[in-house]
Each structure stands twice: as C-alpha cells, then as structure tokens.
Length: 212
Image 1 (tube, rainbow, N blue to C red):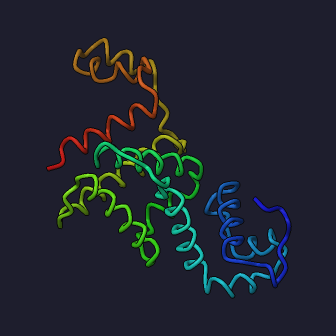
Image 2: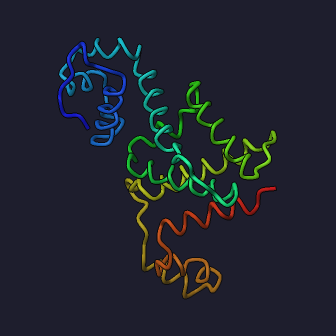
Image 3: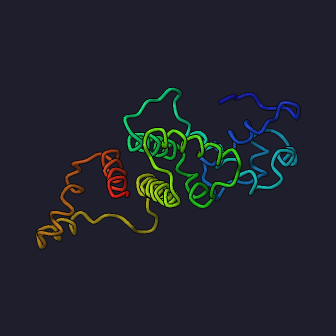
C-alpha cells in the first residue's frame, strides 16, 4: 500500500478505496466515517465527495473492488471441467473474504449493481460455458447458492460470537455419550478431523454434485 499522503491533484478513486478498506479492516464498519477517512488521508472530506457523492456510493465502489479482486482469474487458467473452475473461483472468493472479514456485512448486503461487476460475471460465464456448463435460466440459482454458502461459511469461520455463543465442550461430550446419532454427527467436529478448507470444499462439492 502506498504510504505517501495524496494531494488534491493526486487523490484518486483507487487510493480512496484502498484507505477505506484499510480503515474497515482495522476498526470495523461501525466506526467508519467519511470524516475519519478524510483525516486518515489528510484531506478534507469534501475532497472525497468529488469521487463518491455519498458514503453509499463509496461502499458500492468498495464492494465492486472486492468482487473484482475475489473473482479475477489467472490468465490462461486451464480446468478439466466447469465444476473444477467453480471450486477454484469459490476458494479464491473465500480466501479474499477471510482477508477482510469486517467487510462481510457490505459484501453480504450489497448486490451486484455496476456494469463492470456484470461484465466480470459474463467473462466467468463464458469460460464456464467453454468448460461444459449449460447456461440456462436456473443457472443463476446455482451461482446464488454457491455465493451464499461461501459467504455464510466465512461468516462462521471468521466472525467471533458476541455475548454468548460459546461451545460447551462438556455438554458436547455428554450429548455424544447419550446419543449415538449425535455422536456420529459431532465426532468429526470434536476431533477436528478436517481443516476449515476441507470442510468448505466438501460443501461446495456437495452443492455441485446435486446440480442438475
């Protein structure tokens, strides 16, 4: 990240988005404000409004920027089939979101709204079609399900519960001793047999296996 403070002449959208994400990463979404953003960049908040008319537009731009980072595929990537491509895309999305967990509320509540976001999706669809996916009206539900699963998984993985929500290990053991069904269900979690990444991939593959 460029540490040099911008001047009125050198201030740019990319720099503003970069600092916005840095502030949200550091302190969370609730503590973010346009005033604090201006202070961090050593410019007047009004200077930011030259690029983004309001905070909502700034957040839309940030969401767009994160999606572009998360869904940008490596050039000349080769896949055996569309399912493998989907797994790579969703894995990269998870990795990107894990780097910015404080931005999850924005990503989860801001749908794709810009032309560049939809063009990015179109480029991915072109490659998926080349790899064998039949694009039909219901394909959007597959994409929505995979995205919602990935977002939900990262929420559970990266966000610590507040005011309760802590696992009672003694209760878990008692339940397993009392119920064979619960024992079979919870054993892998208790014994930590699978990493978070392995668990994530199992879910993605299950969704893909059930797609018709």
